Length: 68
Image 1 (cartoon, rainbow, N blue to C red):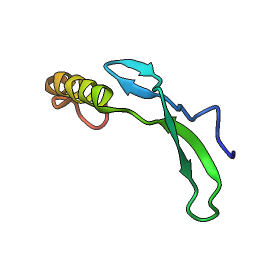
Image 2: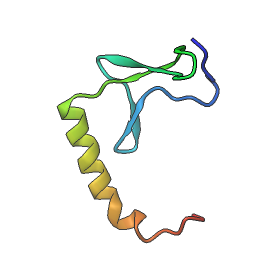
Image 3: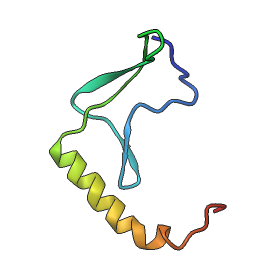
Image 4: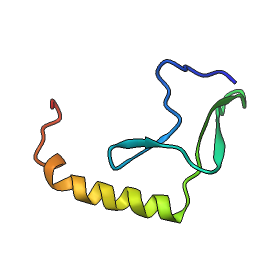
């Protein structure tokens, strides 16, 4: 697997914390088919948590500028 381990995080960021999942799936380079990373395959529960966390964060984020 060709990865950039120093800059690649293969967990999901939900509600301010990095979380793993029970299962993962491969992300491949379409040019050569090589696996770039294994990333979390989140289910319904984790997806609903992520959506709720994003909705809760939105009021503060929408007031920020791109520079911030």
